[in-house]
Length: 248
Image (tube, rainbow, N blue to C red):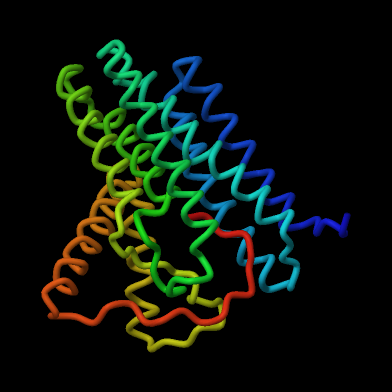
């Protein structure tokens, strides 16, 4: 067996641990911790692939390990959170809808693994699983912060679970930020907007994170509609892929 690169896989392990922590917290009724754990898992997931490529430490083992970790953190953990937080009140129907989210996450990851080298690097085919899982997490955080009637909470979580599941297995294009590099250059205005955005999010993350997630999904859907009617260009052809540890 070839040598295993240490740093990227340690970061992937952080992703896996956060998914495990989210599952345990959901089962214990600590939904705040369960939701934030998914957010931290997404941060680890964003870092492992980037660090692996920067260090030229990509490997087949890392790709497979990353995919299994993603299924735990962005498929199983949010599915359990959906069920324990709201959908369990619907009985068997709630159980199946929660499983539908996990199933679509698994299908999305499997499709990503076999098509990643054939698609444009600046777009994902279907909603990425980390984004879908974090939309569940952000909405749970939002509900816990603002408070919702139990019936309304269950209804909105049901709608969210089905919508995210369908978006994950859809063929819609969603922007990827893989091509953004730490040394990317931009004007002062871009820097100011970026810093202002971070400040706004940090002021009230319980609300702004959910809003940002909604804007990302809605803007992507609108972009796809405009492309369909020929008002905008479709994603460019893919460049040769060096491989790596990225979530789909």
